[in-house]
Image (cartoon, rainbow, N blue to C red; front, side, top):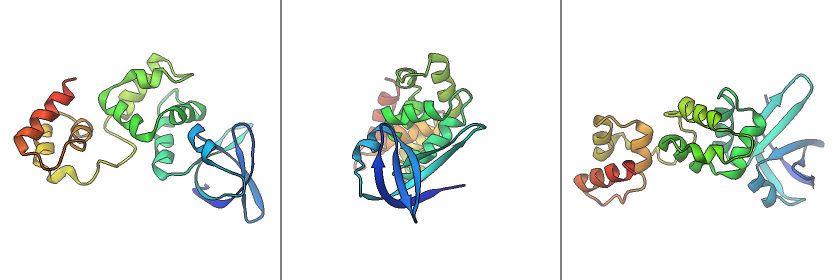
Length: 185
């Protein structure tokens, strides 16, 4: 399994590019945002997700490891294939996907071409509590407000998403009050 490649972007096509690594050119399919940031001659490191089928072998490339992890999580959901996962990650950042999963935002997924309402619901159901990125995983277990939300029955994902956005200088009561207000929206 190829985990990452480091090389030079040799040529760009409509939706892919050739990455030359040690004299071998690999065709990589990136997300839309990453495609537009690449230029021929640029040296890059790309995290790879392989899609191997009976009649094709495709390499999907990500500039950041959390995006690759998000791809694997999304494709683990029944009914979400490689192209659907890439469509989601082309339209939304990993953080937006994580927030949508934590908050049960079906619209974020169903607005993506090729993702229907049932698939969007399945994504949220299967990935809730298994968030992909970890910007809010700064060890919230020591935060009393986070612990209070957990004891009130909120999931770790819900509590973490809300607590990470609150100013650190707030007192426990104010943090919990604001967090409950935010979750209630």
